[in-house]
Amino acid sequence: MKKIPMRSCVVTKEKLPKRELLRIVKNNENKVFVDLTGKANGRGAYIKKELDVLKIAKEKKILEKHLEIAIDDSVYETIEKVINS
View 1: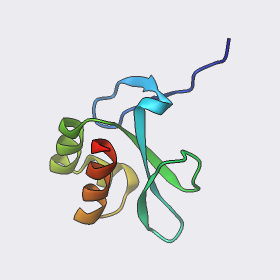
View 2 (view 1 turned 60 degrees about the vertical axis):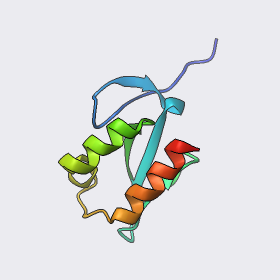
View 3 (view 1 turned 180 degrees about the horizontal axis):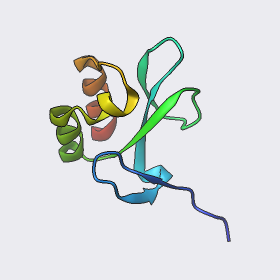
C-alpha cells in the first residue's frame, strides 16, 4: 500500500492528504502564486480547498504571516478561481 503524504492547513490546523489542500508558494523573487503541481521551489503554505477557509485566511492575514510577505488581492482571486473549478 502506498503512503499518502499528509500536510497541515495553515488556517484550520487540520492534517489532511496533500491532494485535498491547495499550495500557495513564495519563490526567491518574492512572487506569490498558486502551485498546482505541488513541486514549485519556495516557501509553501497549504490551505483547505474551501471558500470559508480562504475568507478566514484573507481576513486574519494568515497566509501573509506564514509566507512573510504582503499578498495582493489578485492572488486571493486566483485562489478562489482554483477552488471553484
